[in-house]
Image 1 (cartoon, rainbow, N blue to C red):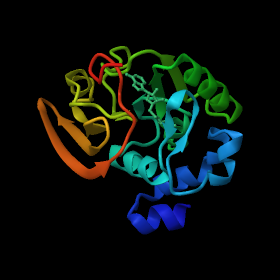
Image 2: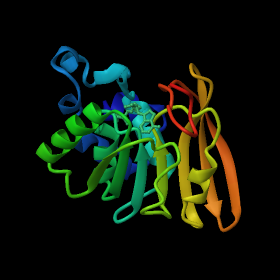
Image 3: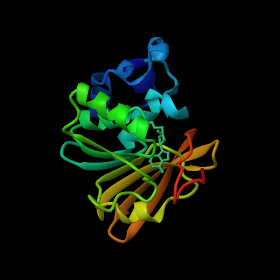
Image 4: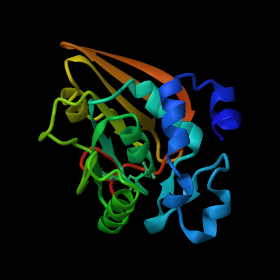
Length: 206
Ligand code: SAH
């Protein structure tokens, strides 16, 4: 998977490739999907949600440019797979999930796999970020926002904090990177993506 789906498509950060190679993706999906664990696809998990395609997880992680000891906020825990990849990179992760059921499944799973010390899972609407713990070195949003939530920009570390999130309509979006330098924020687009909607105060209505 690392060679055929990630490196060959331009994911170049060696640390990211090693981290992804170390996380057992099959442990994050249900029995029915096990055979597809390393396929080049997003897969369904509980509550009508999805675990992102490996390429997207790799690309977003690479764009975040975080490393050992960095504090990262993830919005949309889902299966916990992305959080595990960030933990493999040595990040300290707080991950917010609006579905109680997904949060508790992911928490138990990450504990079993030995990531509990590095990942703290909270239940709630993460669309406004998490003040407690800000400023964040990185914020990764794993669900599509209609616009860039102002609260997330403000919670970025002034010295190079980065926000990676899909922005657009409910069905298709652009992957946007926001980098902060003091009171300046620069935005770049990394191309088209498809995510489930971010539901909440700075997201879409339910
Ligand atoms: N990162 C996940 C994939 C997440 S799918 C993984 O690796 O498996 C997107 C997730 O965002 C879903 O679980 C959905 O319930 C959650 N979500 C949507 N809106 C949210 C919000 N406002 N706050 C927190 N989580 C949200």
